[in-house]
Image (cartoon, rainbow, N blue to C red; front, side):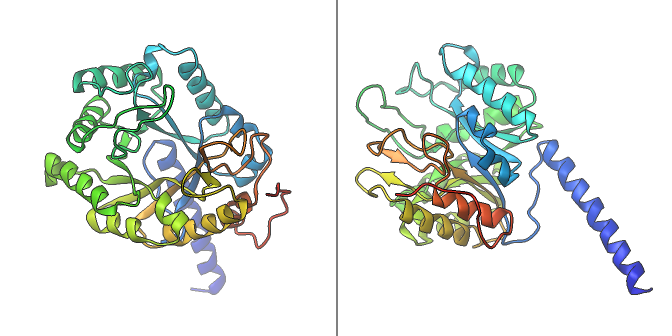
Length: 331
């Protein structure tokens, strides 16, 4: 066989493989990255305006993540359902596959729903949005009971409840791709692992999920790999970094710094390369805080949609560029 003919065959096979991967993504089946060092990169944000931002479009990403109340389809809020509809419409227009993560209800943030109530609510969601086939039963399930001023306080499910919500979602949508458990690494890694182990014991070995979700903010922004390695060691199957990225500001931990965010964003990709089991990552978030007084800000852009320096780290990585020509804002 001549080299020219061999090259032609390889090109054809590559084209067939690309088509197969594209079909898998469109069908809601998780596509595998081209190499162990290259997980698929997306962005998490709840603002529909993200999709119309020229800087976002320049990334050519095809996956995005959205967090919404599990009972959003009941339309009890003036904002949640319209915003979700607008976000999904904008994502569809650009051919972006949505990952929807459910969270506590705005009405009963301090009370976990019964399994029957949860199942009924997510069934209603799926009836309203049958195109959504990529789901998470509960966002940051192990975060615990959070007490904040005003109406910001909310509760989180126990590990056993998380397992029940996972089974309920599977029963309602057996053809959906479900990220079984979504956990926050935090600074208390043993507590995170204990939560995962209780979840696993409730399900038993035959019902464990094939995809796990991790928010490895602590590792990414403290420049170590303790939590990510621990979760990798305690699970099997794919691990998606469903929220990750460099933090601009976190009250009590990280003062406002775009330079530190940029450094942490670079390290994020180092962590993503720890294992070929890490097949996706969703950078959170796109839209930055309104003022420097925000408690949490991890935006790749400021509130006006202007890219910050960390954006260029994403740009260079996903587009395989040596430099970023996009103009960014400064500290």
